[in-house]
Length: 114
Length: 115
Image 1 (cartoon, chains in turn red, cyan):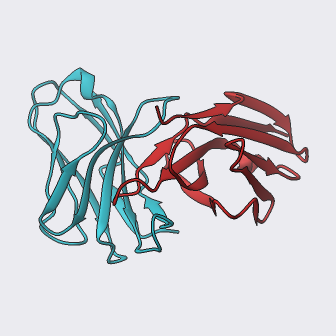
Image 2: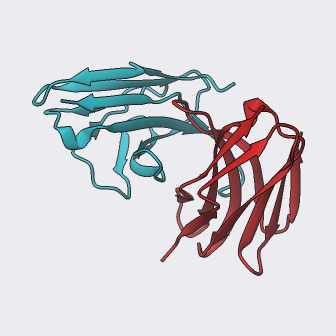
């Protein structure tokens, strides 16, 4: 069964600190892995997309890593800011269908305190 | 910021009413999607469209229906709302890309409450 599991479920950190969010998946055949940021009451916004051949990708203070062998990904946030408070969703796409089905994790709820 | 819009943003309505959630995008994308999301849970695909006059049901069974008469417009309709339909509904569209490496843009969502 294609699944995406994220940990931790929630995380609280102080402003300026770094943190790492984890994602494990069982989606096969794998096409790509995305990280989205979803502010409360808003739609998700894409942070990174990584294909099988990419093992790291950065977007400002966000750095995603991918280990396709162990089917794990992480999202590292550097020097956190209050505006980083949001849900971070790991999404994996398969290549077994024309649509490119997306499998969503439940997200990690990050809260940054001043 | 993606040019995809949803109205209304919030809707509280009584049981049995017919409702239509609007979604429009100005990017000329052929593929459009409707997702349902409950608090703390993952997004579930309920409908998608490859283009005009194309609509398909997604993974999660839904009593809603959709139509795609124009490229930019993908409304979702519930003929008779029930409390079980209370949820957040997110519309998305995607640009053409190589294989499945397309970017998917989401609207702000409609928070529906059925009393």
